[in-house]
Length: 127
Image (tube, rainbow, N blue to C red; front, top):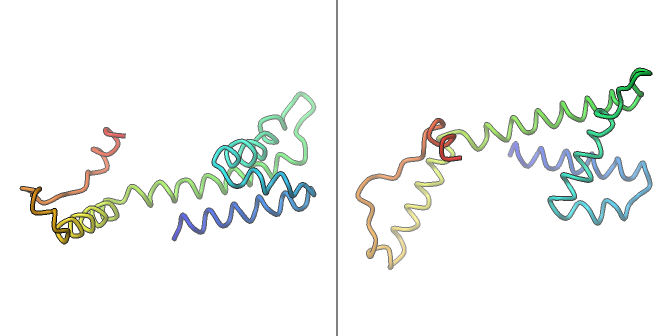
């Protein structure tokens, strides 16, 4: 749910930024693949912040870039906690094991131990 809210929020934000700029074809083309999100959305909005500070001070757009980066940080942190909760992975593994045991070919392969999700520390080592 948190991830869906994050994607919808950023999709809406990006679409309205493009509508205000009047460049509809750019959004329609770039929003359909991941590199479009990374290059055309994240970098486009972050570059105002990165390039906004110079020897003459800052431009007025960099304030909005800070807000953009803060919202992205909130979303990314929420997504990180969403996928790192052990119960989420444990439930996923148990659902897969339950489905595996219901398949007729499952009698060929049996697990000796109960499947358990990795702890957060183990998952970080693997990742």
